[in-house]
Image 1 (cartoon, rainbow, N blue to C red):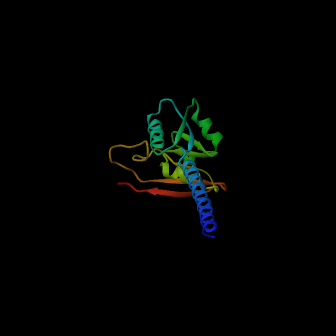
Image 2: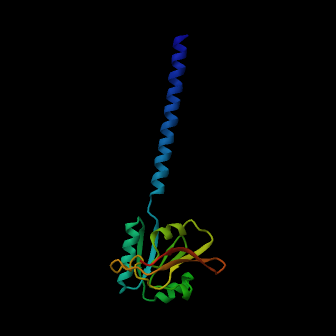
Image 3: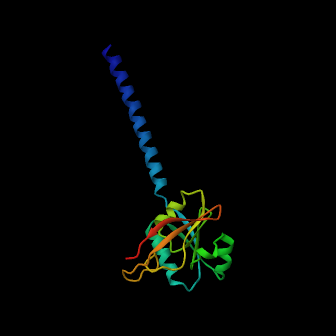
Length: 161
């Protein structure tokens, strides 16, 4: 009888070990998926230095950037649905949504979770926004979301220093 109980215990332990191993494998696979870089397409003018700095900001924050130099940025903005009131120097696309101007990486990541928005923007080129660093000077700026209904929503606010 002792042998039978011992064999059952060993079988149970093997089964439990397999469950733990399977759980660990699943956890590792989902963690690897979660840490995969988000891919973003950036459309920019060849002569714009701040666009290159913004791309560096995205890459530093884990993005894979497809850098696309464009001859006609106005046509790109129009094609992607960027309204003139939200315009800046460069336009990016992630998951079919536009990212206009010097948007911080955190809000680009947040955009991927928002099905209600067509895109987000930091209008103009405010000093201190990513890619527009001027020493420690920072102008106040907002990240604006454009809803599918065509309305603006403040997604984030960055105060001046």
